Structures are given as structure tokens and as C-alpha cells.
Image (tube, rainbow, N blue to C red; front, top):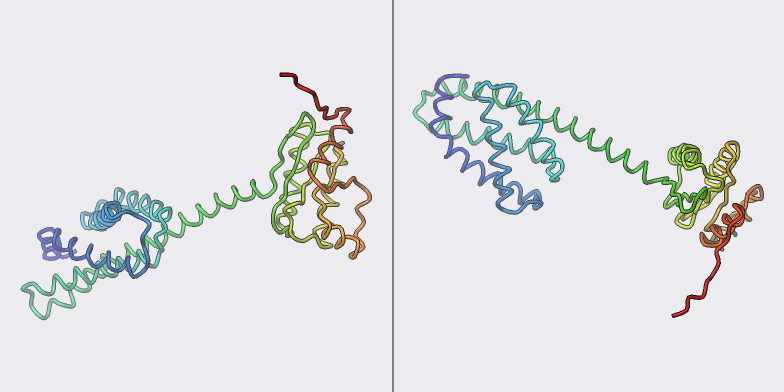
Length: 276
């Protein structure tokens, strides 16, 4: 970068930062960025500007690492990529306007603008790349967490497990249910597994087919499957669709299902009288 620009930025750093922070803050208000307190917002914004200024010093390793960390932190804070790139564009404008207000010859204007563009454009490109990569990583971790939660297998008694299902079941989720069910019954040495569909809003032919497949699969590894949570409207839908569920036991509630599972494993719930 031109020596004049380096000296100008170094001499006017605080004025540039102040002007940019004021305009960036207003941009944040326009974009509805209210996730931080005033102090934290200003601290993060100043960190942003200091990272940009690191690039002037050609400290590439430190710059790239800090920019990556910044991208990860603002994703968690909810800052949109458009807001960050607009902030960089705004910084470019502040620097150019400030530099051109100085005592420079008219013929140097284009040179100054080109130098500053050559400085800011790679930062914008790197920020977009880092943000996108961090976002994909975050989404990937969230997807894994959601997959684990979408079909959990819970041991409730020795050799008895429950899989509570909530929400719509599509083909992808049905595959996850099957995998979790098979791995879980083996891991917990389940003799009986209860699939609870109380929280499933609609049971159509496809959903029933997936459930039947899951029941048949666990039977192959020596586990009996009970379907519980059959609400009246679900039962009516199953009958109207002609879906056959007579190959395994069905119960209206989870409680009745657990009682049946205990009986199948030679146990039962006994009420005892406790004297004061």
C-alpha cells in the first residue's frame, strides 16, 4: 500500500474509527441488530475495526486467525453477513472520504481509491469465505444435535426402552429412527421397545409403513415392539386407510404400554399401602 495512505491511516486512526463506529452503529439500528448491550456492541465493533487495520501491517497469520474467530463469534451473536460486508463497504467509504479531504493532488485521487479498494476487497472476500465456512460448520453441528433429538431412545426400566416421536416424520427422519432404534435396542439390551407416537400429528400410509419397517427390524434382533399413543383420530385414520398394524401390540397411552411391557418381561406395577 502507498506510504501516504499508510501514514494517513496511522495518523488519523482514532478519527476514522470514531466516524466509522457512529455510522456502523446507525447501520446496525437500521438492520435491527440489538443482540448486544451498548458496551458489548461497541467492543465488538472496535474489535472488527482493529482486525481490519491489522491487514495494513501485513500481519497475515494474525489477521486471518483473528478474522476467523471474529466470524465465529458474530455468527453466534446473530450478525448477518450482509451487515458485516456493508460495514466493510462503509469503512472503505470513510477512509476514502477522509483521505481525499486531505491535501492531495487531483491526479492522486484515483490512485488513492485504487489502493484502498485493493486493501478492502480481499478482506471482504475473505470475510465472506470465513463466514460461510463457519456458518456451514454451525449448521452441521445443529443438524447432528437435531438428529439425535429427533429420534431418542430412552431406557425406562431394565430391558425396556421408549422412543418418543414428536412432529412430522419424513423419509430422512424415518431413516434416522430406524438407525437409532436398532443401535439403541442392542446397546440397552432391550427386550421390549415402545414407539410413542402421541406427538405425531398425522399418521398416513407412509408414516405407518416406516413404523412397521422399524418394528420388523427390531424383531429381527430379538426385541418386541409396542406402538403406543394411538389417539382416537389416529385410530380412525389407520382404519380408513386400511393400514394393518396387527403384527404388533398397540396401546392408547404410554402408561398402558409400559404396563404391558412389564408383563411381557415378567414384572408388574404393584401399589403398596404405606402406613404413617
